[in-house]
Image (cartoon, rainbow, N blue to C red):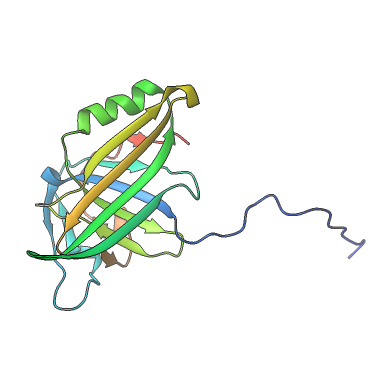
Length: 183
């Protein structure tokens, strides 16, 4: 080596922080052909535990690091065990783009594919019980939007080995052109 390296200051990158989501895909329940339910005592599923219709649209949300969260709560009630799941993430973008997407999809239910910072991949919801959207916008904060999805189900979120769309849907013929990349 021709010289010495002098390191001054701290790295600009923040430290790794587990517990946030890194990838998020939403698929309308009407486009889901099947989702396999949790079997026995395991919530581990294969990549083939979900099937979609040809031409189905998958909405990908590009989320900022350390902003999207997923929470799950177990409750016991007279009907049995219920799992309340909620996922929320902020988006910045033009008011018209995000607002129009929310308006078009506000009455829809969704199956969610997501991955966290530790690499765990989740399948949330099913063809007959999808997550609902709620939305908040702060115009004074440069069109800052907060989108939340919630669901109550009879089993927790399922673990799947990947959310790579090419592996889950190898023969897909859907329109993947709609992209909400407002970071």
